Length: 373
Image (cartoon, rainbow, N blue to C red; front, side):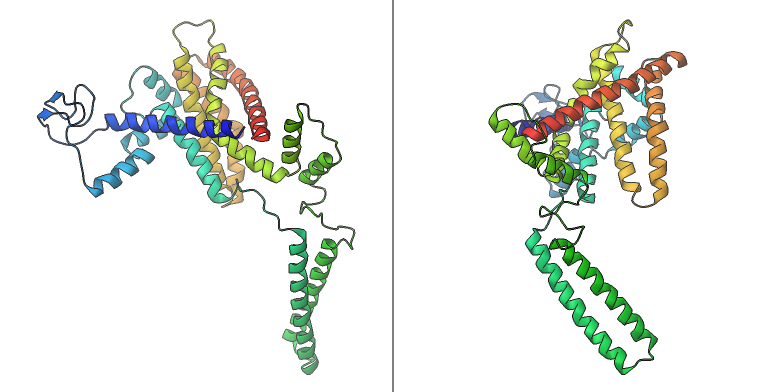
């Protein structure tokens, strides 16, 4: 199933490349009009753009412009992003409605901003270490390191005892001696746990005793986990389950690569909300889904950045998820589809229920791909 993950990354990369290529063909330049022929297709041109292929008439060939092209193409930090993000936060219904109605030159396309937000979110997670697998030092190495640390602590204790014997009335030496004795005791308990001579002995696989990772690994080793399928599939799945931390990392990476699956999973549920109303197409629902998913991605990313800074931000993030998400969905439904307060309210309640189904289906799919990968 590694080919499936590669396909997921390829599809995401292809979509981004296509959007960037399309964006390049339409970028606005403050260049004076030129006359002659297009350097791309050879058609006669009299303005800033070729009427046949859309390429700008004036082609820059400076190193400075190459850097500008890179920042502009990859980050999309032009005027449109600053028009799109505020509307996405405070008036998502208007943003969705205007894009569907054809007012598109002033905003970033829903697919482009969704892909960029997902990429940026997982990039932030990677920098914070949230997506890194837990690396456990092998037990023999941990025992050797702990013995070295214990020997060092005992040497420091002998030196502190000798110094205290010379100056028995020194309070500073007495405090140092007490701290060194505690350090030796802690090191002795740790070594006893690692070598299996204490009740809380460490596990050979490095997992914390009593944790869900340890319980899952033990269940797999004791054949307490039943996996159906052919022998190769069963062996692969059990091998993944025996290392829960690595499996979790694999699932997180798969979630990033296949995040676009949320789009086709969500559109049918949104369409169900307007099954008996004419005038709305699956394209309209797709735009709604893309902008909504982008808003949720930005919220998750912001919460992950601010929560470690101050505990109060964690509380505010929790309130934002509890109250902000339904409020955002309500505002987007009401504005995008021109609904009354009552119509938007009951559709918001159903949409929240549908979100549970969509996320469940997505998580199940990602876990299956992670196990098979």
